[in-house]
Length: 239
Image (cartoon, rainbow, N blue to C red; front, side, top):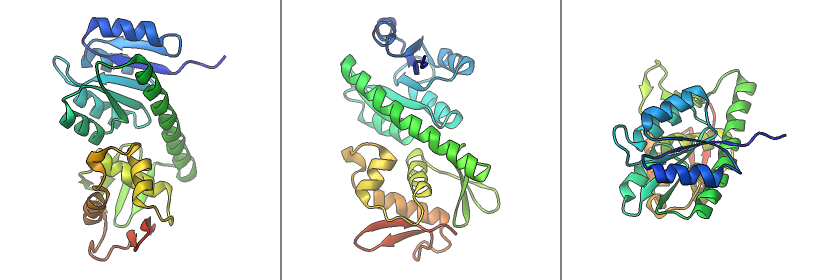
């Protein structure tokens, strides 16, 4: 018998936790937590396949919890619960590595569909990490003068010093790591790195690549690692 995907629902509202437990239990193995501390304890006991996190909670908020989860468990799926007006929080959540978000009040059928979509992507991400480890013995990929640690979501310089990297910059580098010597246009990069075509990042791919070049290229003005293929897109050339 196939085990049910493990779902952790984190929200300080008891009613929402009860609804989630009742509605999703036939499809998933559901646990709930009222705050970030309880969520951390639940994850320490058993790592879920996907976590649904309310951003606005007493004490540690969902954004901080999402950052911890993404660093500790790169393959885990993360969906953020926001209010309709929390545009900035949605952007920050996605920057920190959340896979998707849904605004309150939400339709349970829509949330279920988003959960299933994120679980598919999380499974693919887990498989990619496993393949990278099997092929190389570790989770590290060279990007010019730097090394990307796929497991820890961190970028390191040649001297071992850590180079600050946002979640979206990591996702973009990971797409390139998965597709060496392949030309990827902006639409492909947005789809593979950010999972959905939300308007806020629609024209930010070029800016993000420019920032990455400043971190990994010996000469950002004449890139050798993340090359521009005029009229087509970008290509990662491993050294």
